[in-house]
Length: 402
Image (tube, rainbow, N blue to C red; front, side):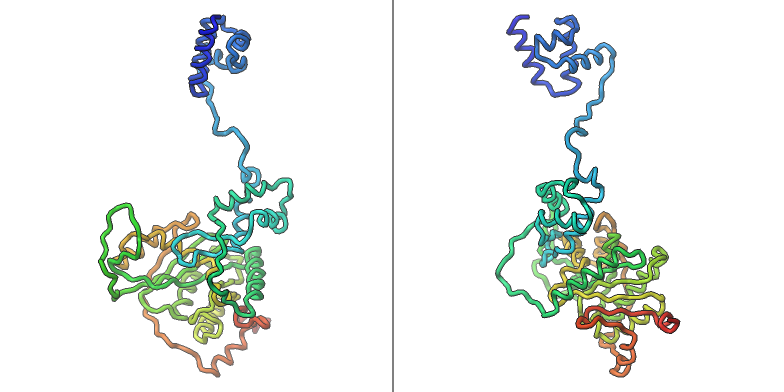
């Protein structure tokens, strides 16, 4: 075969995309010029004889092999380790925090990829041989939304002497709760009030949205309160135009458990992760009265497990607020209905939240007398030296029976 012709045939084939089209061309050339011989094609043109045989089979048989190039290459680590991503996320969540401005949903891990890999072996039982490399773990962390952030020496860390001990106990309580089928962990908190009106709120949008040129004082505000189930990824949002009081908080909890208790027949204990806010801390007499009534009504144990002061951002529910802000950012929250509709269309952990408006008006400043609180205090089992942050309440009927 003429050398120039060989070069033209080879160059033409190399310029064609791999797959059926190239094989179709090769089959025609070999059939017309090389007596349909894969061996001659390999010797003369340098084409792989197995590929040419495949091409000739297609050409003469009138069919086409399905090319599955997307299935080639090394499989992702999670394909042979199906729980890997969930395990990485669980480990990173224990050492992460939200963007304190709530402008993004990004969380920043305090762990390195090497440490995550080590913890996968220690906590989850993976062997060093089956785990992917540190670089792969690093990519998985980025894929899950965890990003490293430089530590800034700009503000003194606000800590109390008990902070580290509180976090240690929280880790123990939460880990035990998540591993126990008879215990359900809930994360509770309220977001800052939202002004209702045609305010820009420093949002951005791909379409023209015109807001008032000044953010005047709004006559109407609404406050979201959330109940989040970290293990299930479920979110329940309650909105009120009034104050978030102790009674409001427990009423929301009561509504949630009345609706969902049948789904968790094995659950005998609720662990409540909260910050030590003014309406829900363990020395707030009305809250403790109402939560004790809740315990007695549903015959269920409640373990109060609070985050230390200045560290409420570690509470899982706090991450919801960043996602919610990002979700309705750039839109005019000009009516209560708009706020509720936006909240309902939110997707968090792949699920839409259950949204409700609480229309009841709650009285503020309700509290027990010192004598009443002294009697109620006998019902509580507080943790030594961390008594403000960890309180167990047992149903009265079970206490008397036991």
